[in-house]
Length: 328
Image 1 (tube, rainbow, N blue to C red):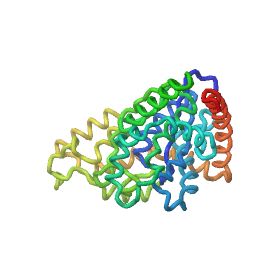
Image 2: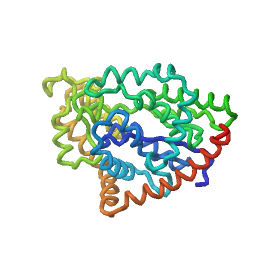
Image 3: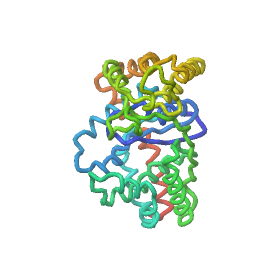
Image 4: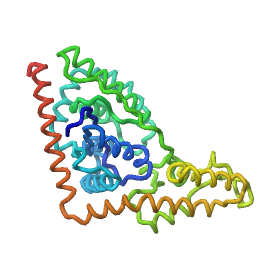
């Protein structure tokens, strides 16, 4: 690709992508593809760590995720879009790294502990869930990147990846760089009900939603719970809707909305109308790109086939070096 820096990142295909995914992840990926050699993968093996009991939607979700990525602005000619399970070297490197990773490192992972406590409707006592940070490390180290775009919640995983790379290099000689966390600026995207926007809560505005569906969702969206009448002054700092004005409105319009809210000159219904206008302007080009891809039979498969081939070629090179270092 002729770019000096290399990066890699992925997403689990567990359902449709929402605004939080765009502003928290995809917006950054779109920028990265223009300046780095970027590898973006559909992490279908990772989906099995928690959804192993029902795999009926995974293939569908993979195709829909790629459409969302392209709609968001990823260009297959500028980056490598591939499917994790199509590059079997990920599984081999994960196995080899598991040989040198102490179990105590996995058990201290804060995400492992949190999800075991929070997800009560699934049995997460499987080895795959305990060991998924090793697979994640393999996914990253395979492409020997200088950095990985992550949010703050992923920092423990990045530190573990660096520790595994350090341990491998100590035992067998230098091969893997210790990738740095490229912190993605936090984008506040609350759900329709005030909780975190999440596929599992079904409280999101999805990138593939038609506008009639979005209008209905926004009409029922929580705003400032303390503002009971239009004549009551509002508080944008606690309003569930205002963070979206911060993302979609111009600085001048945002200032006008804040002034109108706090002075009770702008009601919540009018505020939602402004949000819907800006959201439609934002989503229209995304959905047009998505529809264009959807209209081409086999287009998603072509994108993945090309990306799989490119990723596999790099992965084979890495594994050849890794086996040589380990004496295999």
